[in-house]
Length: 212
Image (cartoon, rainbow, N blue to C red; front, top):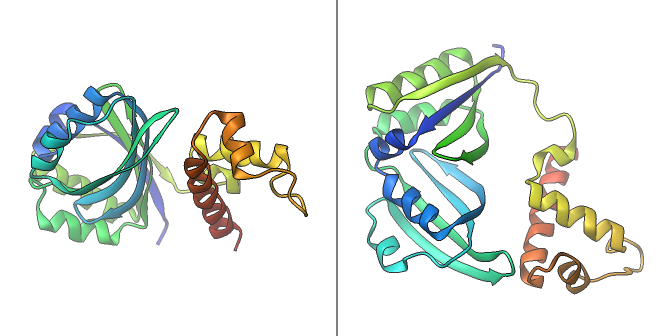
């Protein structure tokens, strides 16, 4: 069965209908700098968010949709949080449909909308979009076509991961013996060394997953 890819966008009204609108509002209030999905699970996800200011953590803890959260580091870019959430207003049948998808790719926040790619058979994609509509969540289909996958290993990385990986390579981090350390890369990019180490680990994992 041919694998298809659909690019869809959802608005703030859709986030409210899912029951995660206040989480997004809190994130914007904190000043979103970087957003990365770490894992997608049924009607929820685990995301890493870098924000300019600390969240209103009391309100964050009180949100029904937030399963758990952790402020993992503070860097020159801001505060890094890992947040696990579940959209309480989405039906369990949608979670079952999501399990049939091959994946969602590169969720991106753009102003008051977010875009995601649904990858799977056309039947599964249509059923998933139908479940969204039934739940009162309007998802705007922007594009539907054959799934071509990623053309280069670096396409699997976020912009920040590519920047860190390329800087590490340029400074000699991958030379034998090494000419640079994570501290050197961190100094070059004005980031915390622990953040650089995390980005390198994720970038290396994604590149090796693609190649191997």
